[in-house]
Image 1 (cartoon, rainbow over the protein chains, first blue to last red):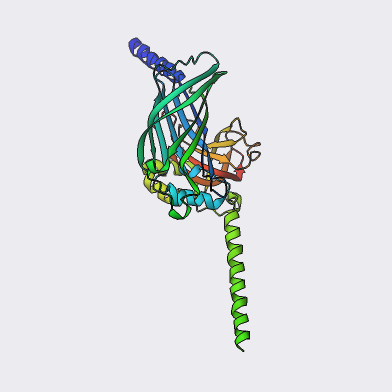
Image 2: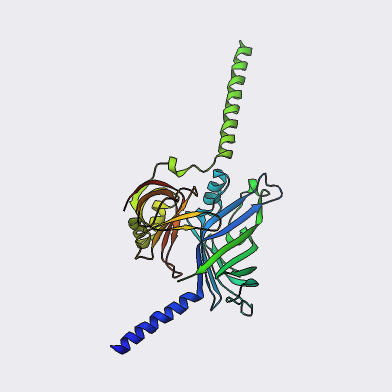
Length: 185
Length: 151
């Protein structure tokens, strides 16, 4: 009986230690900018419900982005984005599964700004692609802010731009990630 | 006679052009409507909504994705991010699963405390299964409070 209690306590303690290695948010922000030089207006969508988890022990980084949660200035643009471009009824979620590259020096116990490189697989619109991006981690007051700006080619994810607006939508989309992670308790 | 007929056609063409112009202008400038002004496509409890996604995500997506839902449940927590956005989390305190309601107006949940039973109207944007160890969540965007009941 004693042994069983010790084993159970050890498992709970281990889980607790593991949980402290993980940081997360469910209110991360990702925006994209598909504005082309000939766009009559800015084509910008913002998503404020990104789920992001960073395991500081392994460097593994995961994100889940619900496509219907992208918001636009104009309703028509939002409808076109969902129905004609990313087809969010067929592909409701975009996922990133990757890791901070080994060798990147981040001291999670010490406040500071740490440049990092991240590699992983980005799955959007049913297409998975290996991606690499530079970013930074800001460790401050027990929280970690994950920030990155990178570009992705829409054609790599089979997102077709109608010929009529081909020169009004950028083929390379700028993606901005900003997630403030808190320790998982 | 011919001139009279022509001017009639011209008038109709001008009116049609004007109507078309007004329609295009309105469509182009249309904003996403406030969910408090929209009728809910479905009314259900948070537990029912989570169960629907857990038992079949594809079917639940077909039913609920992009639709205005009126979801009732107990307030599990009220979250505010650094930009002032507020999220009402509905669900059983003992469960990891929740319905996360991102409020349209930041002041809307100021007076709502944990444990209250509430009905929230919002647009369902999808489901995150518990594959990151954070619990499963159904997300509602552009939410407004329909009503609340004291616990």
